[in-house]
Image 1 (spheres, helix red, strand yellow):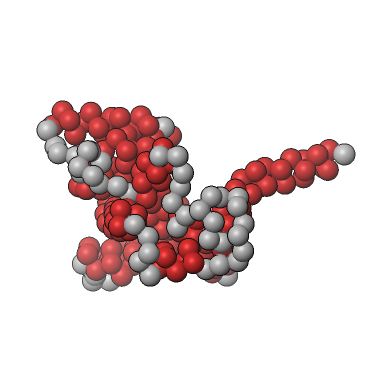
Image 2 (image 1 turned 90 degrees about the vertical axis):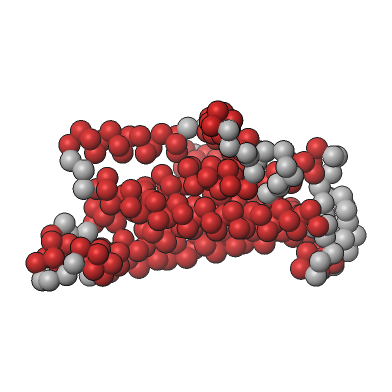
Length: 265
């Protein structure tokens, strides 16, 4: 009975989590403007999404979301990789303190981070817009990259870097040809995680985008919902985003399992 209840509880949680996504995916294959009203199978919403039938504001929000996500993910990966390497080479209490400080943004609620960055930009007189959103996303994505890279650094033989220097490699060559190949899976995982966190963020973006009309997909959906309904083309868009993120997670898990098998061999 205990095993049955635990499995039933698990399945109930899975249904509650994924049933709304499944409903959105199903009703993305009908032309009905109202979610829940099935008017027959149709790919019209997907055609509108890809052939320019959707509104210009939605298209701009998608472009802003993707560009901000790519830029912030690349910058976060570079900064996070450098930071992880620096933290790894620290010793004693300093290393523990810096690691603890790196964990704070991940544990801090998004709304607190958004308000803090909003007050900071106002205090220094920075005009809020595209740049401030990118800076905000880099701020909360970088610690996740550090968290992804640190395990790879711990798995690395600490004598490898020094051995490369003893064999005549310069510090930059040893870093590029010895260290980076070993931490590359962590960097790739951090890059993908940063991108998904960026396109998913709402609270931080809302407080740092200013009032100049900049919209990302999350803020567009919020504004669209406040008008009393959602744009029908959002249903296929959400379905595509979910499948894309699912595929990325599968790639990350496959890469992780392969790296573990190589280490065991």
